[in-house]
Image (cartoon, rainbow, N blue to C red; front, side):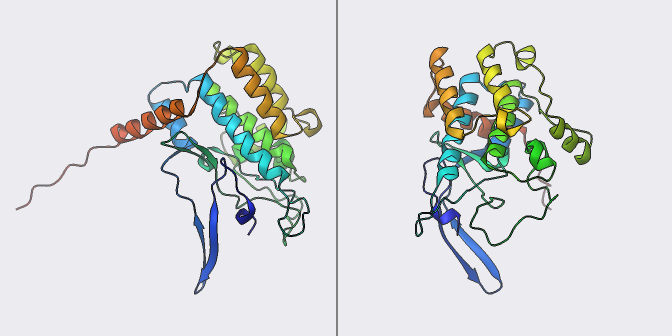
Length: 260
């Protein structure tokens, strides 16, 4: 029901929901393309770095979608919905062949209007993309989504996972510590002011982070202009096509047995 109220270019549209016998179903917009997880995996297999401009552009568009969701009002009452996605991660960011970027799956989303409350200490979301407060089972707000955007930016710009332990417990411990290695040491091509933006997005304490996705989006836009990093939908289309082609080439050949 929550998703039905969200109409934005950077959010996958939900058209209807219903029930068939004992099963519930959701009718959603079809996005012809790939998710960010596949983009990252294909780039790693090809020993190829996602271009800096494209990485920043993708996450800026994600910020635009999150800002809309975070600020959304109830269409009936006009009350602020207080939406937090809580699962901003590579599989939930879709890139279309037309260069569109859309957030999907508000299945873990938290809203002030929800009927169920999360029990204290319950961790929701993919461990590597949690915020420190979420990893500690504390109450989260929109700044948890901003932290996740920071994690994704770091991964796209370095080709390395930021918080990835030997097991789930170790990963959660790394998230709680929120120690961020200097990004320019791993990828010297990244502008120094990008590192400043990242450290603010990835601040351990929520009060020290960007307080809104709009603020982060604006800083990313300014950085693109400042460094003359021109990028648009056509560039994202090429990134998607590269991913599709790489996936096809990396699949093992199917050997057909001769028929007798």
